[in-house]
Amino acid sequence: MKCNSTDAPKTTSATVSPSGEIEEGRSVTLSCSSDANPAANYTWFKVNTDQSSRDMIQGQQLVFGAILSSDSGQYLCKAKNELGTTSDSISINVKYGPKNTSVISSPSGEIEEGRSVTLSCSSDANPAANYTWFKEHEDLVGESGQNYTIIHITSQLGGNYYCQAHNAVGRHNSTFLFIHVTALQGNDDWTVTYTSSNVCSLRGSTVDITCTYQYPYKLQYRSSPVETLWFTKEDNKQPVDLLSDTDYAGRVEYTCGEISCYWYNCRRCTLRIRDLRQSDSAVYKFRFITNQPGGQYTGEPGVKLSVTVYPTSCTCVCVCVCVLEGESVCMRFFADLQVKVIPSSWLYWVNLNCDSTCYLSGYPAYIWYKNGQSVGGQTTRDSGGKLNSEDSYSCAVKGYEHVHSPLVCVRGDRCNRVSYPTRNMCVLRGTSVDIFCTYNSYEALSHKYWFKWRRYQQPWNLQTEYGGRVEYPAEETGRSTLRITDLRDTDSAEYRFTFRSSSHEWKGTFHGTTLTVTDLRMEVTPVAMVTEGQRVTLTCMTSCPLTDKPSYMWYQNNGPVTGPESPENQLVLDPVSPRHAGNYACSVRNYPHLRSPEETLTVQCTMSILHHT
Image (cartoon, rainbow, N blue to C red; front, side):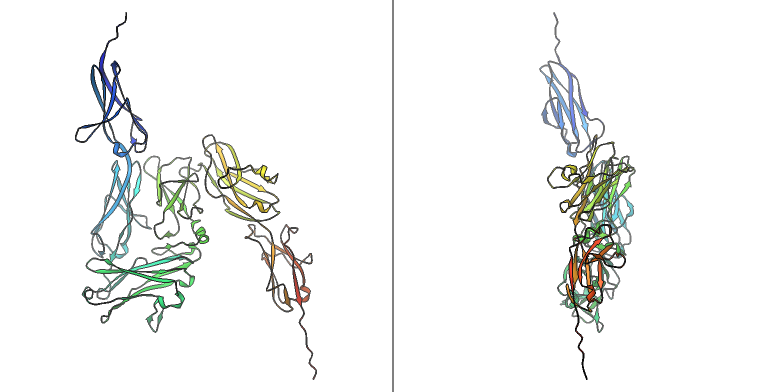
């Protein structure tokens, strides 16, 4: 006969899984075990800072689906049966990246040139964060540490500052803190300070040019109404107010208001110019006038505004601000975005920066992409973390997601990616087109194919849909070509490429190559019926610029017009004569059978009048 012994719980043990460091957001399980007969019941408690405990949960395990920083602390497990109670405790230290990062200045508000100013950064982080200081549009200011002191500040050192808090888990940037420095120069404390000395903006956009101004302390308590104006021109050595300048009619406005300065009441004025024209490129100066004797002052040297069609022609001196409005312009600009990969001293940690040749005003939000898909929660120009070698990264400016930077690998060049060198193609109906992409897979491919992109629809097999008009020429390593023959209007669409491996399917949301199928048509100017001696221009036209930039051929009454082929899409008859009358058509080189519809040119003869004497 066997006798079962009974025991109170003993050798009670609390453990945590996974072991090692615990990072915020991970799943964590606390387990309790003991040797007891009858079996023990378990209760978990969290020990408060006052050494009291709070009943958490009944059960052998305490599970945190996504552990929080506030879950750090000491946990007590009690094992109890009818014969007794024992316990064991375990501590959890949840590591998390910096958050709630902020920066303050001392003194605050306006700072007079020559004074000392200290910037202080704070952040909530575990382990404690280290700090690095930055100035907007510049690299590192050369300082690390929680405080950054400028012993002798100058107007050139004014601007937006921010700090970056970082530890082994992550990093976080503070918002901008604007340091406004009031300059000492001026005529008896009459000063105008511009926030930028150079501004580069795009034609058709809107730009703001801002300054602060002040006048002597003794005048600020008199009845001194102030008249303000912005100007670029002078008439008899007197500034011409932009509000009355006919070249700017309906396109300019002023906004002025009082701000607090050190020892003074300052005012800030902003000039806004809408619908920028290239003729607006000039030096803009601010002038203010009081009713006191000699109470007027013009801020020198002013602000140089450069208005350009292409942002790459901006010469960025001091500060370059590109203000974007208009999709066609923005696409050309954002094509120069690129992701810079910045190695870190921490193992497996990589920093990313969304870089451009020109800076955007208004501190826009950025969108980051991993393997062509948007990464939520990242809206700053900088990103990073423990990034995998197999993943590719790209960035875009919010609102212009259709124009993103090229995909880059964070380590090596074997990451998953698909790139389309040509985003748009325009090809003649009835001809053939080769659409190609470059791609790379971190692993061996199991499947790859092209498809016609349709919103909310699964990819279709092009071979079935196109009835034998689709070919896949012999492929080179890392390059795939889709050939479509006998093009039709219905072939106009966006085409994308995808692939699969054992553990990855490319599901990038980036635009592929958009194909537009067009035909030829001809236009006669000024009209199809003209008088002998006039100038006539025949233009061979398409609905979009042809991708291969072909040479054009011309036909009169079904016969070729003598003369060499021309890359120009126009045939000029000057002066036109009766021999030029007839039916005209045009084609492009190598496709003489794909002609435009004919247009008839009628030439009327001039009448000569003979006078008898």
